[in-house]
Image (cartoon, rainbow, N blue to C red; front, side):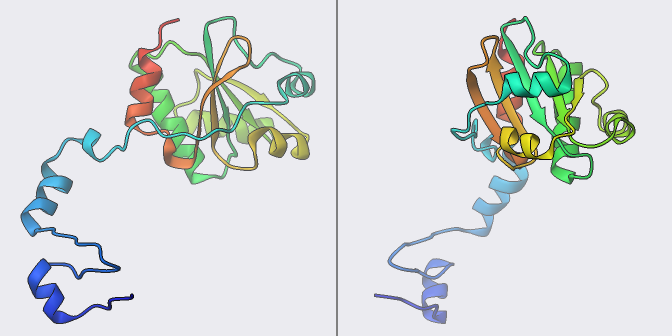
Length: 181
């Protein structure tokens, strides 16, 4: 049975009971959670989904270069040059590399060399191996149509993890730094 907001519920619990759920938050608890708690408490762990990297041979053929490195792992990032989430992810990965991440990064872009270079310069990506794919259909199929689409793959091309958008959080970045080459 639906239970609607009532002032009497708000006075008793602080937040109304909705659909039988009881939320008991106080201002002090909210203050501690958002302002005093370390960032990892709000980080929610290593996020990801079950997308797998595919079309690597086709991408390599179109780009004229290898996507996977000869090291144990490679981070493959599908970025677009105008996407704000792509810019944020690129900056975070670049800072992670400066902080000691040993995993090589291959950034794959659609579009022009000039736009790609400007993106890498302004978003901390100069240490990335960058490739340009001028086949939009192939780019969309390989990235699953979501940007940024970031794959952690082993040297055989098997997907270890996949992040989209802002899912590459601090725990994920620490995980990348912890992997030994």
